[in-house]
Length: 92
Image 1 (spheres, rainbow, N blue to C red):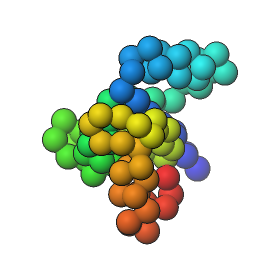
Image 2: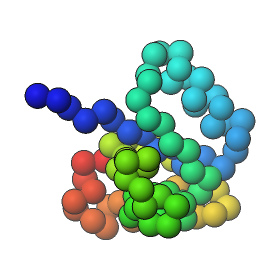
Image 3: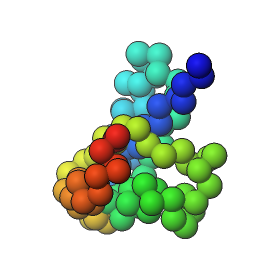
C-alpha cells in the first residue's frame, strides 16, 4: 500500500528562522515537502486551500504544522484556534 508523504507547513515571518528550520530538516535527511508561509493569515489560507494555495498538487494538505506564536500578519495563536475549531483537522 502506498502511503502519502507527509507535508510540513511552517508558519514563520522571519526569513532567517525559515532558513534555520529548513537546514535542520535537511540535516536529519527529511526530504518531503516543506512549505513556508509568513503569517497566520497565510497559514489559514493554505489550510483552506484558498487563493494561491488552491492547487493541492503543489500545496498538499499539511500533516504537521510548526508555527511561530508572535507574528504581524496573524499570530500562531489564531492558527491554533482555527485548527481547534474544526474536528476534521485533528489529523494535523
